[in-house]
Length: 79
Image (tube, rainbow, N blue to C red; front, side):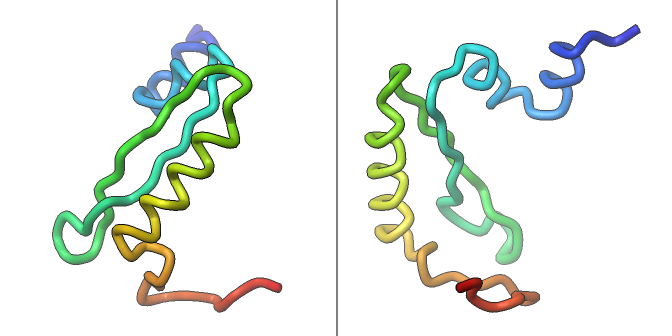
């Protein structure tokens, strides 16, 4: 029988370690690899430094223009 850890690693092998260790992490797109699907990077930080990861992620999102990106099928802004 597959363990919880094995299932988690199979589902998201690159974010699994942060989920298990409790480190703050964020994944964000940096470019569209085929003009349609985003390629992403993952940022990870020290435990308790969530605010730094969120700050850097927000700045990178603006730098790469993802704060203005809307996919072809989009439900609109949620208020």
